[in-house]
Image (cartoon, rainbow, N blue to C red):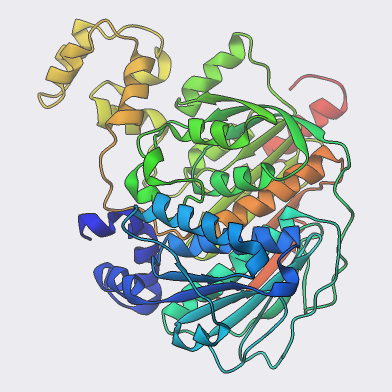
Length: 493
């Protein structure tokens, strides 16, 4: 992977896995392919359609720079916003092209249409939304026009529709012809043939208030924040993430651009959600942030997480908040687990097994800093001493000597934010998968604040275009059920 393509290494790796090609071949392929995103004139003034259009452009640009947009004359602000997105992601030397004729669609490798028209002769997918419902219909489905029903504006359905469209375009570029004819309710998490599902209730007319932790501010949390920004939610959030944005995050992170490289990920979330939500960015290791719970920061009723590391996800679960919303993505699959502490619904301890070889947080940091795992785990707020320097390997001693007298937690934060090394074993990721997980998580967040959320285990795969919402329960001997009994009896667990 060349330096020029490193920003899009995550989507390229996933494409390589699907197409049986090298990452370099897929990066080159996506540099050459052309995508058209169009908005039908009758949808130009529909708020949700505009959101769908711009979010689709955002996602496609993160793997394919050759994007052309076709918008009605009264929606030229969307064309301007698309150009700004392209400049932010690819630099000012690359720009979205503006089409003036719908006949140009024949020269594109994929077409995302926001509206109702379905062209069965082209590599085409049509997307739209009604309330909480997102729908997508592709060429080859046998449907000539997508159904659409006017409904109160709802960014959950609108942004989910964009993810469906971007996912179909990604597969089309790889030479696959997905046959899609479905709609998904972000309210009920049901999937059905198009035109079947109810739009769902209107959003609250007055903002609902949140007090929460957001643990992990990576790709899925980007999708969550992008959606929450557009929902009637106010309040306060502690955003915790140990890393800064790196150039390779441009591929799967829908809030990232080149100007944000080097900025703590938690800060990006704070900037996105201001001013409606007051977000305190915590660029810290989760286990070190937990120390703050002893000194004035209380445990909120709601925790939202977007993490890869299973051990950390277990650690978050073991705080036993009233509600935990766990968002995840891997390959072409999204997953959401909602756990209420007073329910018997599946908890993360039973849903996720720690994979063989996964290091715990202190062991990982020991390898990265040269400090002992025991010191990091048990004495993080003490100073680095000469004994720590002497105990470190020769490769780490010069840096440890410079850090003598600094708190261990401070050295850990510095390592995480500024000195993280490249990992050749990074996981492939694409924005339509990670963002979709975040959109679903944001919908569940709003439902929780409205008192309408229930325990669920939801999964969707973008290659099979199938999803399922399971009502799974933990056994009576699970740790979560002991906590449930204590809470239900009024005792503190």
